[in-house]
Image 1 (cartoon, rainbow, N blue to C red):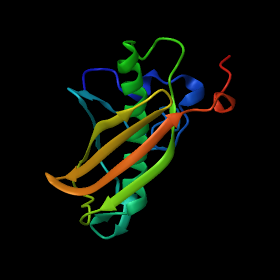
Image 2 (tube, rainbow, N blue to C red):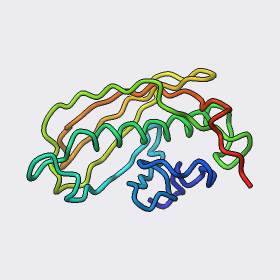
Image 3 (cartoon, rainbow, N blue to C red):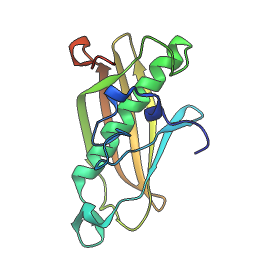
Amino acid sequence: MTEKAFQDYYTDGMSHCYGCGRLNEHGMQIKSCWDGNESVCVFDPKPYYTAMPGYVYGGLIASLIDCHATGTAAAAAYRAEGREMDTDPPLRFVTASLHVDYLRPTPIDKPLELRGQVREIKDRKVVVAVTLTAGGEICARGEVVAVKIPEYMIPKEE
């Protein structure tokens, strides 16, 4: 990716998530960006994400869909307001609902590509559909209802 990832715009206080936090040294640190009207993220699963030999465990798939979708929701909200992601006030989203359909076992030895499409965008809510593929095969589909983060959850920056 040549452009800055959505997650790279998050403030330090909002960058500790296990899935997408750039400051979580033990996390997945996923990176998402726009590819036209779709968001895209590529993730290389490590051997410790094994469900059974050769396959990714479902919790990883759900986490990837979740964090890619909430990042997409933030980026889409900025787009809808005609703003860059580094402008104030910051727009961050959390998951209100996560639905995942596992369509086939997901191989662990291939990069996983997630593609997100914004289905609905309103003042406080963004709905994002995500498809996860491995080796060109669709392995899972998900839908996330993301809502603007409540004020009390926003860390105070120093």
